[in-house]
Image (cartoon, rainbow, N blue to C red; front, side, top):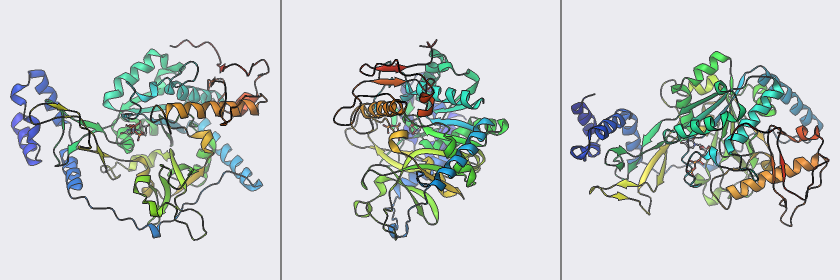
Length: 475
Ligand code: UTP
C-alpha cells in the first residue's frame, strides 16, 4: 500500500494522528510504522471503537439465570463406576493420539511483573524449576503412560514469542522432542484512548496488546495448528492456562466425560469459597451455558439461590477446558464469533507534544475476547467438579492471593498429601501448611498412584524433599 492510500485509510477511520511524527522519523522507523499500520484490521477496529463510544450498561436479567448441571465428585458407588468408565474412555482416546495439549501463554502478566514469559518463572520451591518445565514433564509422563506421541501447542504473543522459543531451546525442550512442540502468536489489537484514537507507545509505534485468551481461536487457525491437528487425527484440545501450576494436563476422566456426553466444549468447575470470590461462575443463561465474570456480578446477586435453594453462582470456572477441534475451527470460520470485551487500563503513551507519559489513572482501552464465551455456541457442554486444592493454583502476582507465594505453598501441600498417601509422615505447621519444602518432578510422579509404586522409605521427612527421575541434561 502506498503512503497516500494509508493516509486515506487513516483519515477514514479518524486515526491520522498516528503519522503526526512522520517528518521526524528515519527510514527504518517509517517502514516499521507502515508495517504496523498495514497489520491492523481497520474494519474490526472501527467496529470496536464504535462499540466503546456507544457502549451501554449491560443489563443482565439475573432472575432468568440458572445454575448449571454438574458432574459431582463421585461419592456413591454408581458415581464411582461412572468415573471409572469415563477414565477408560479418556485413556483410550489419549492412547489413540486423539487429544493434544494446548496452553495459552500470551498474556502480558502485568500483575506478576516478571521480565519474560510467565512460563519461565522459576516456581519450583527447591530448585526453581520453571512453570514450563512442570507442564512439559507432565506431558512427558503422560506420553510414557499411554505410549502415545503427544503434541503440545503453545500460544504466545508477539512481545513474548522469541523469548519463549529461546527458553525452550536453552532448556533442550525439557526433554521433549522438538517436533512435538508448536509455538504460535496470537493477534494484537491497538489500544485506544477515551476518544477512540489509537494510543502511540512511541512516535513510530502504535500501542498494541494481545487479543485475550479467546484469541486462541484465531491463533489456532492463523498458524495452521487446527489444520495440522485435523491431519494428525487430533479431535480434542486439552486447554489450560500457563499460570495454573498444578493443572492436570490431559485428564482422562475429564476427556472421558466430555466424550460420553458428546460435548463440544467442557469446563472444570469448583465451588466458590465464598459468594464474593473473584472467579467467574458457570451458569445457564438464555438456555445456553455461559460464564458470568465476577466483575459483572453485582453484590446484591452474589448469593442468589436456585429454586432448590442452592447457590446460583457457585460453579467457579477455573479455566480448564476441552474443546473439540472441529468446534474450535467453526468459531472463526467467518470472522471471530466471540464478543470483544472492553478493559480500561493504565497504558503508557506518547502525548501530543511527543512526551512519554506513564499514566497513574486508567487512560486507555484494550479489547479482549474470552475463551469461555465459546460456551454459548456449543450444543453440548459438561461441567465437571474437581477438588480445587488438587488442580488449581493460579499464579497472578508475587504475594497474597493467587500468587507465587500461595501457588508454591498449594503445590507443596499437594506433594505432601501425595507422599502421605504413599505412607510417609510429613510435618505440618499450625496453619495446615507443610513445614518443609518439597519438589517432585512430574516425571518422577504425576499422581498419588505413581508415588505408591515407589520405595519411599529411605526419605527423611524432616529435611526438604526433592524427587527427580534422573539427572537432567538441560539447564
Ligand atoms: P490473565 O487474565 O491472568 O492475564 O490470563 P495475564 O496477562 O496472564 O496477567 P495480567 O492480568 O496482565 O496480570 C490468564 C491466562 O490467559 C493467557 C495468559 O497467558 C494466562 O495463561 N492469556 C491472557 C493469553 O494467552 N492471551 C491474552 O491475551 C490474555
